[in-house]
Figure 1 (cartoon, rainbow, N blue to C red):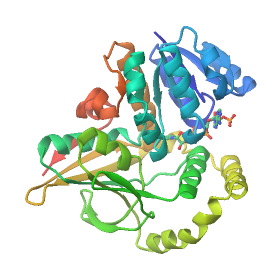
Figure 2 (cartoon, rainbow, N blue to C red):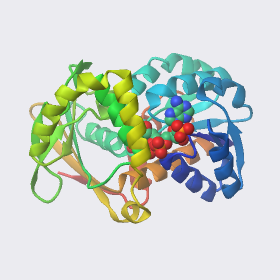
Figure 3 (cartoon, protein in one colour):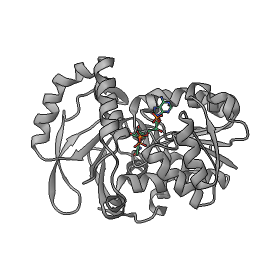
Length: 345
Ligand SMILES: NC(=O)c1ccc[n+]([C@@H]2O[C@H](COP(=O)([O-])OP(=O)(O)OC[C@H]3O[C@@H](n4cnc5c(N)ncnc54)[C@H](OP(=O)(O)O)[C@@H]3O)[C@@H](O)[C@H]2O)c1
């Protein structure tokens, strides 16, 4: 079964491409830059295809699964998913962008009809939190409110920062009573015990605001990031910057700058750092809490994305729109290297 990795020469794409080749998947590398795509393909001893994402449909011959690693995904997911639906190819990506999840949900029926899956978010955002959400829902099926927290020490790649700028320009989102509503990042604060005592955390529009709802049916979802208290002031100040980011020239200029200046975490950081996750579901009477600890975010992304490809290659029978946990179950995260959990209270 041939797996095409698009955006293969980006920071994350290259890590996944190397891992997928190491695990003996039948990999084809792809991207819009011929020199970079072919250069990496030669190093890994695999085939290469060079095309802009808008022309993907003409380049998926003989491909069974696409893993899209080219972000910001608001610029690539729609075109690639369209090509996958037209050619009967499974679509996976490593997005964490709410707008992308929501646009792919809309195409659920088309994917069912084409007998393929649309499975976005098979990276750090959202695999561990989505599996944690599903686990909490299994523990408390009557849950009406879900809260998730992430405590990560890590740095990010230029592509991730460019994507964060893209999302900031669109403003934040929260999920209340089953609906997505505009909500500024940092609008809520909370004290969370990630396992070593109370820590300050601020709300953040992570992808789970979209996906956890489809995984669990729980209509109120909040996601928090552990952060020092001064972060709230920074986030509030960023309210003044957000309208500026909506201006394409300003946003695109900043994105080009961060892509050029910021490289991703070192191999040492990917190996050394750990991330702690916390989740809570409540129905107003009963509250259940679970924790999870994972490797560094990019290390987890590489393992989760490659494992998803392996599952599909092994014949996982999934069609239509899927979240990581609806596709592979809450235990999917527990099968990844170096993950400890679930620790239940
Ligand atoms: N879910 C998660 O936890 C997770 C983890 C890691 C990364 N990510 C996301 O994955 C994306 C990539 O991150 P990265 O660190 O690999 O960034 P990166 O190093 O900047 O790589 C981005 C890749 O996407 C390609 N690309 C971007 N826009 C494109 C377009 N319109 N058409 C075709 N190719 C395009 C780039 O090609 P060019 O160089 O030719 O522009 C490059 O190959 C980001 O959106 C990031 O937020 C998510």
